[in-house]
View (cartoon, rainbow, N blue to C red):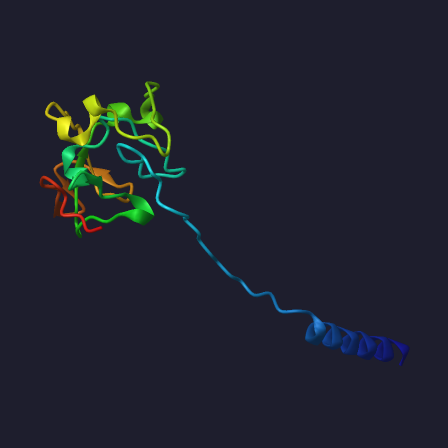
Length: 148
């Protein structure tokens, strides 16, 4: 009989504990902050550091303004643009890097990109590919059709 009393007491205590414990509420929030202010655009991966002149081709600029990448992408749907990945720090580039807030140097301004040599296509969201990516033609076109 004592066993039955202890078992009943344990069941009541367990029921009380289960009804009085606070519920866990899961919340997910992503705050990307403000768009980086970089003279030649910023990389399409966190921490969105400024990219050097020569990384992005002219198709990434609309009216001289970078169309953005990642959470701040302002290009048209299915956009694909040329980059020169030799200027990517993840691929070993260690040359000069601009800082946020820097202004373009006159000799390196977007209007002077006559000799750009892109070697990779990207979509503004960190995806890359060859002539076709996911079945979509990757022709970026000049000026990118961005909206600001």
